[in-house]
Every structure is written in C-alpha cells, then in structure tokens.
Length: 499
Image 1 (spheres, rainbow, N blue to C red):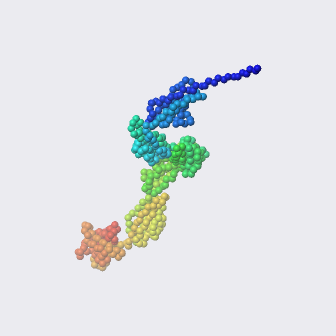
Image 2 (image 1 turned 90 degrees about the vertical axis):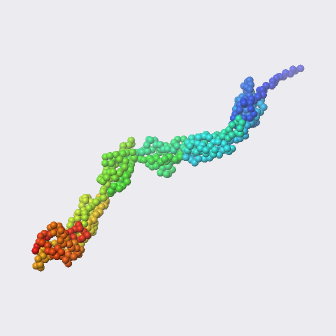
Image 3 (image 1 turned 180 degrees about the vertical axis):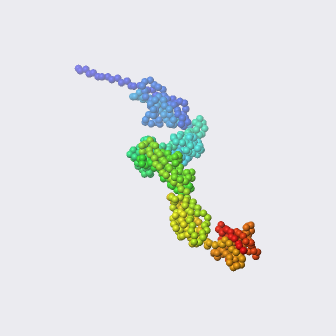
C-alpha cells in the first residue's frame, strides 16, 4: 500500500514581559499643585519599550522607564518587546489643594507711557509681584515703571496651610514700543539734485507706511526719493504695536540755492533780534567780519551791515555763499529852532537841512519859494507855523515845526527934545498902534527906571519927566516889549534927551 507522510510544526508560546510595577518618588498619594512626582518602573532584561498612559488615553505620553508628572489623575505603564506587552496596575496622583490660580491675559502695551491697568486674577486675596507692579494688592501694572520688554508677573495665593505653601501662577506681559526712526544711505539728509536718497526704517517689522508731507507714499522698509520734503514712517511689529518716527526733512540742492533768508532793513533800533537762517543749512554767518548767529539791531546800531553766509559741505552742491546788506537808519531829527520874529514885509531863510540824500517837504506851502527845498526862503505876510517833514531813503520820517511871528516894526527915534517948542516934545514910537498891550521901560544911566508904561503909551507917551520932575539931558536906555508874554522878543537900545 501507499505510505503517507506529514510535517509536524511545534508552536512554542512567547513569554510576555513581566508585569511592571510603578514606584513613586516620593512615595506619596497626594502632591501639592504645581509640584512634580517621579514615576518609575523596573528595567527588565531585553530590548523593551516603556509606554506611559494618563487617564486611560490611547496615546503614550512618554517612552521611558521613568517620567515626572504634575497633573492629578491615573497613570499606567506598558512594557512591550514589540510583540507582546504587559500593562501595570494604575497609580493615582491627587492634589492636596484643589485651588486653581489664574491671571487673565492682556494685550501688549504699545506705549511705555500707557495708562496703568489693574490685573485680574482668581481667587481673590493674593499678591502680585514682578517688575512694573506698583500695587501688589490691586495688581496695578504700570508700563512706565516696567519699561520696554517682556515682564514676568506672578500671582500667589495661600494654599491654606500644610506643606504646599503658596500657589503661584505666572504670566508674561509685554511693553513694546517698536523703534521708529529714519536713516539714509549716506547718513545725511542733504543731497545734490540728481541723486537718489534711500530712506530706511528699522528691519523686521510686520508693516510699514511712509508719509511725505502727510501723504502716504510707500509700504516697504525702504523708500527711494529724488525730491525733497518732510518724511515720516509708521512701523507696526508683531504684537501688534505701532509707532511713528519723528519728521525728517530731506533736501536737494544746487549751488544756486545757497540763500540767506532776508533780514529787513528798517528805521530805528527797536526791532527784536532775528535768528540768522539760510539754505542749505550747515554753514556759518558773518556780520561785518565777525561770526554771528543773530542779527541784533540794537547791538549793531545805525549804518549798513554786510551779512555773508558760507557753506563748505561735503557735497559739491553744498558749497557756496550768499551776501546781504542790511541798513539801519535813524529817524531824521530836524531842528528848526525857536520861534522866529519877523518884521512885516521881510523874508527869512528857514534852516532844515540834515542830509542832502533826504527828501524834504514843507507845509503849508504859502509864502515859500520852494516847499521841497530844505532851506526855503519864507516871506509870510502874517504869523505862520511851518511844518517840515524829512524822509530818508528807507522812508524813515522825522518832523519839526517853527512859528514865524510876523510883527509890525516899531520905529524908535534916537533922540528927542522936550523943550515945549512943539517939535519932538515927546519920544514918539511910530507903529505902537499895532501893540495895544506893549510894555515900555526907560532907565537912566545908573540903571534906575524913570518911566514905565503898559498898554497906555499912545495916550501917555514919555515926555522927559519922572513923576512930573524934569529929567536932565543925557543918554537913556530903553526896553520895549511889544508882546509882554514873549519877553524873548523886545527892542533894546539907547536915545538922547536934549533940552
């Protein structure tokens, strides 16, 4: 018969790793919240894997024979050789305290001078610590005290005694003012016409916005310009916080642009000092050969003053000079002198000349041979006040006036003979009719007054008597004041008395 053969397979079961045992260090069931505890299992022979599981989860939290844990819950460890595995019993870890400490988050402070804020934390009754905390109880965070940067702020609450002490939560608060400044490719703000100026803002910002004279002109970290103006840049970082730079004036020049800002010529010294300015900036001023920064009218005084501005820049277009002459004139001060007494029918030359370069005008123009001449001939027929106006080349004005008092001449005889021959028996003053208040005084040779009359001479003239006593022959002195209130005008002289 036929013989049948068969293959026999012997199956030997694999040995699973020994059941792992979890050891706690320290060997406690409860830990303080925030503390950690070491869980470990024995290392078995062979190439084995150690997987830890928390609260029955499906994914391993570590591949190691030991771990450090902080969370309360149930922990197991699985030991595997890649084919077979063995799971430990679970180990429970509890907190001694169930207090949960929390600090609410805040957005970053985008300005170091931002308003202080009271931080909110729970549970209440704890203490805040950290740089920038100005009230530990209220949790007042003051950015100006903290300064720029990231600041660690902690909030601690008592765990209620025991070994756990305080429970602390820590959070990071940021005070961020992104740097906003403008630099140029040359380090200068002045360029020659035809050059390109590259303006740069700080790197690594999230957003850029450039402004020229207040108008938005670009959104990159760099800006190329070929014309001048006032530039600013606004930068925004990743916090996000924004900051705007100071204004930077970019100028483009050619040699013909070297120019002094005009200083006004003027009349008198009562002007405020003016700060000297010119473009392009960076040069030096000289006034009358001396270095200066201001034009001081009072210190410089009257006359013509030469201002020279010179710039010697590193660029060819920033080299050159400009000159300006500023004149300070005094107000004319004509002096026509005191009142003038002028006999009727006479003429007199008025003396108003100060400087031939000035212009002259007289008012009124009546009885003047030339009212535009400084020294006109005046022939008034009656008393007149003349006003002289003098102007300099800058239009500085000065005035003065003079009264010309036109009077009727008095004809005074040099002798008379009161001898009752009916000829020259009294001292006759022709023309006295024009002066009804005239004052007449006569003195002998010893200075004694022998006759006085005021307003009565026509009715009672001098007849050679002193209180009805005949005066001797001889020379006598007279004073006649046609205008008693104007003693500066009088007739003086002598006459002879004959008998």
